[in-house]
Image: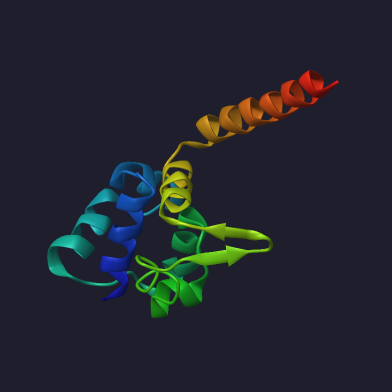
Length: 120
């Protein structure tokens, strides 16, 4: 998979439009469209902006490590085992806009506080 294909895969997974991606990176929509249409890659000076916008490392973008090979992988994080339903939750979360993520975290905090109150 070439870099531009990886970018479009991540845009789809994270539910980010090309227009929103362009705003986040400062890259014109026509340039982004050219990557898709002509199967070309971004210039080196845009790599860090792209990585920041997609919340990935340059190594991940350039090599595909952790992107190309993560579709059927289960991961353990600390004491948690991540299964397919957890992966779906994470994908949905990463596809949210920042405001939605903040609200979701606030809901979770509130639920945890309520649960602690109910235990008393």
